[in-house]
Amino acid sequence: MSTIQEVLSKKVPEWRYQAKELVENHGNKVISEVTLAQAYGGARGVKALVCDTSSVSADTGLIIRGRPLLDIINILPEEVFYLLLTGELPDSKALEDFQAEMNEHTEVPEYVWDVLRAMPADSHPMTMFDTAILAMQRDSVFRRKYDEGIQKRHFWSAILEDAIRLVAKLPAIGAGVYRIRFDKGPIIPGDNTLDWGANFAHMLGLEDLDGSLKTLMRLYLMQHCDHEGGNASAYTSIVISSTLSDPYYAVSGGLNALAGPLHGLANQECLKFVLEVRDKFGGRPTQADLAEYVWSRLNSGRVIPGYGHAVLRCPDPRFTAFINFSKEHIKGDEVVGIVEDLFDVVPPILKEQGKAKSPWPNVDAASGAVLYHYGLTEFSFYTVLFSISRAMGMVSQMVVNRALAIPITRPKSVTAEWLKDFVGT
Ligand code: CMX
Image (cartoon, rainbow, N blue to C red; front, side, top):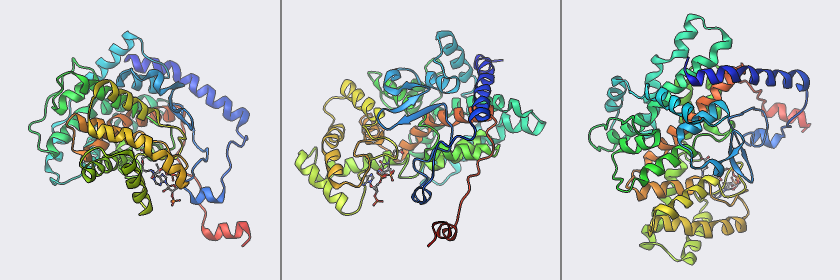
């Protein structure tokens, strides 16, 4: 049994006991109410899920297993994956074992490359990435064991096997999508002496003279890993997984939700917006010109990409981490400069306009600009990067949910007629 399987074998009974106690002793306590407006409004704010891997508070942002993001900002993506799965950070031996276990599964099956090369040349990188994951569904350990009759109490362990096998391959698949889709030459084999984030930077094949692209990829892949249970992509994947579809189906499906412009695709939209500003003004505009531009965009009924959030009511700590990174590693870049100016200009304008509940930047306001600096200029690829990381949170949530035997998701819907009857109109 691998180290991570052993660690979880000890934890799962504790998690089960805690959930059983809560439900048995407090199962009838009301934790949330649903208004008619919430039923029409994307169920915003309705507490109807349990997610222990992370939480998002309005004034702190992402908290991973009880640790605010900025407190653990320098850990490796593998460490955060271990943390998401187990609730604790690995010591150096556990990290080494975990990395070794992931390294056993980095090899991408040849048929995946055949599938990707057969796709139309103008396919969106997200379509290619999600298709590659789906194509590997035939290799699911959970599916095989389920067909063989595995007992329900062991589901989580088979899901964990799939989780590690799948996540281990994602950097290679992501880098492969980049090189195939944008004609960058042959696929670059991985170097398993490197850590997960550095290996991804290596496989992309971009110039990295001072090694800071590797640092950026560690940061990028670490901090996009999870954002509690109710965000559109995590929720989608959790719903799929609740049907006992395996993690290949569930991650691929969840990432299709991440591909929407209001969600993960926003990083692509956001950089497009920043480049539009640069092109319109022939460089970095004055803050007064920028303010006028932001107002004209708002007045034409368009959103300011990278600003606002469904839950956060403070600058996203992931945005702060990117800005801190760029201050340390990137000097005099006009695109990054525009991102910094937008941070000064946009919040007061959104406050004055008074529509957005949060005037603050979310992660996507800065992520594209730093990637662009390193020559990763194909912005339709950015959501793939996000996906490689977010898959860690999705599969971790699946492991926990199967450990707790959470049943198939099935909230109740009502019709407009039912609502009218209910309110008596
Ligand atoms: N610019 C202009 N208007 C905005 C806005 C922004 N950045 N953010 C919100 N608003 C508007 C909404 O469009 C909405 O207007 P209507 O009432 O006319 O429909 C109003 O403010 C209230 O919206 P909200 O409750 O504050 O925001 P939501 O929870 O509905 O939506 C989000 C959240 C992120 C989709 C929204 O802020 C937005 O569209 N932002 C721009 C896109 C973006 O940056 N997305 C990335 C999100 C991060 C992620 O999930 O990956």
